[in-house]
Length: 282
Image (cartoon, rainbow, N blue to C red; front, top):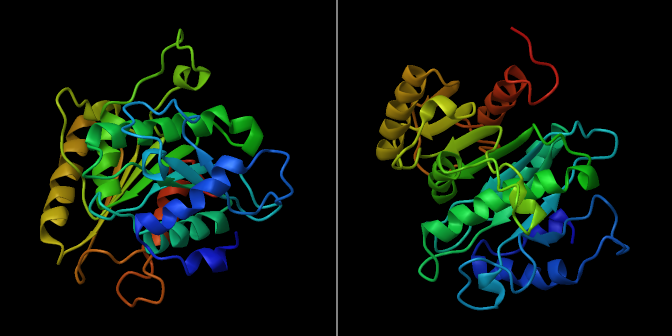
């Protein structure tokens, strides 16, 4: 399915679920080219933890966006769109972000996670951590560096991201599923619009580098980002904070906006400084 066709798909999760059969039926031997977009399930059918059924809304998956031939640098990212946990803003906070990452040579994977009211935050965090593990498991297949796997979330996906990191672990070496033996902690964390909530036992000192972004008119998330940045600095973690003086919630990649158009360039610079993209320097 082309990016142009994907752009015409409605942003609601129900519309995204129509992509699932393609994911279930696609195998490595399919004729689709390596740059085509397709879905990969987080778990095999019947093995999704805490599943409440076996329909499309019960089966989380990743949609693959690979960089152009000759541009890939081994970095990868899980992108978690927002949507108040009841839908996913798959265009502005999924496809558009994936395309920009592809321009930087990064393999991008848009996460379709389980939604409310059918599922709670526990299931969504399982989906986020499984997505990180899955990319590491498929590092050879996609030519990825397992030490350059990032996570960026928007709104609800951002709130989930903090918990994904706080409860991440190195994996169970004795797990029957080899994917569960891998580390679920992303190597960097991007939180757009809001920082999420602290969880019991959260150790900020062990957080990966964090990129925080919001607009001042989005008051609650901006105050939360400012407070979270201070906490990370006090803990000795790496953090970069951007709060735009104008604007509100939901600006996506900011393309063609006089207010936000440079934010993804700021993210690219953050990734270069952290060694996640080539070209970083003091």
